[in-house]
Length: 393
Image (cartoon, rainbow, N blue to C red; front, side, top):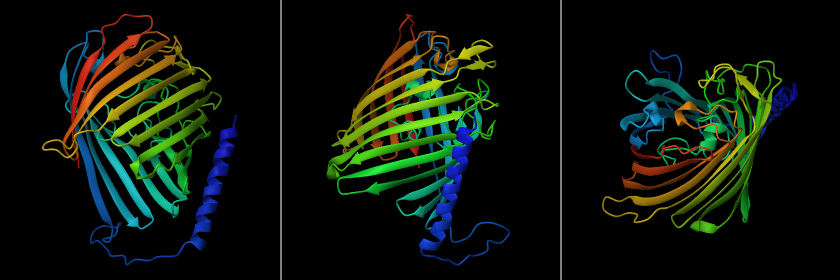
């Protein structure tokens, strides 16, 4: 029952030992500290950056879709305003924090602190420690969920069903890479508080949490192989694994396995991910569908997508990028689905998404997509169209 707790404690001790060892093997550096009048922390020598983005969109889905909980009503939506601060306090130490203002306007607007962490490059490329709240290193989508980075306005179904939507967790993460002339090996290992349930939403199964509800840690890691294909592009194949106990008594366990692959070459970007979850089932007394339903641990899903950047560097065209994606999820029929997706009690559901991205200038992007959604046991009118304008700075 306390296996992951012991493993987590051992990993923390190992990391601490590496940190202490680095104090003796790394060259010391020093810099003059200047006092900022009236401020009792910080240094005038720190170079701080402020970044962010605005994501404004319009969507129009058919009557059976509850995208935006509007039941077929088309609408404009300022979906995100992100403000982030990044500062280097030492050549090897940086700090990052961000605040999100989501769905501007009343009564559904929310302000939340998402990621907030410290990065310490302990041993050059071989070990960097991240301490704080961050997206766990599982596949691609978790790390690339923000609007200026991801190619689609929507996200694959399996991220919501299996990976707790915009999964941000608190803990410590060690990452690094080994480079050879033939390939690179990337490795990530994190010790996290972990989720408090199998549902994606806090308050509805309490999937995401800040402080842990038990003394058992979640262990999550990823290993990837990146063959050297020269300056023409980049290729990578990875495998991820996560396990932990999520209930207050630390008796219910979940496991998630994942594989991912991508290749980028001459403007072409092809990538895909697969994830499978197993473990103990959870009674969700806070389910928005109905009280005391069983959320089944067993679930799996995948997506495959391709895009091609073309006509780059033209007048009013930084690039144009046609895109296509197919994603599918398979969850137990007794699992109450996320209500904002309006999915049925089917075991399986899938979607084709096609669209075009247009960037007139760097850091300015229009994303369009049309979704064709299919449930195995239902014939719902829930297809829809989305377009968004994103500017990052």
